[in-house]
Image (cartoon, rainbow, N blue to C red; front, side, top):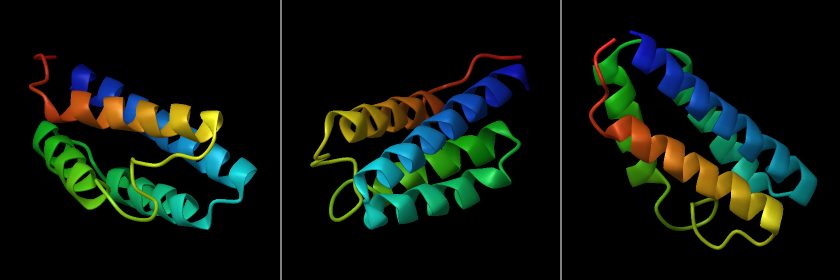
Amino acid sequence: MHAVEKRLREIRQAISNLREAAAMDGDAQRAGVAQLLGELFGQVSTREELREAAAQAMRDYQGGMGSFQDAGTPAMGDAVDGLRRALAKARSRLPAG
């Protein structure tokens, strides 16, 4: 379970970074995305739930307002890229443990 907890910490930190960047930029769309992602990952506890939630997040936020694209500021770009990396790692096969 250690690997799941590590990935969840990474994702939750990335969501927190997105929330902070959205507040700094006054970006209501991405603030809403951060809220929804926080709820999505709030109850995750197993490998399967983690992979499913990460896959859903990647599908849901590929394009459009609040997506992983078109970040207008360096802070938002860093937050969005960090979240994308954390989700991609969670979708991959997790080591045992």
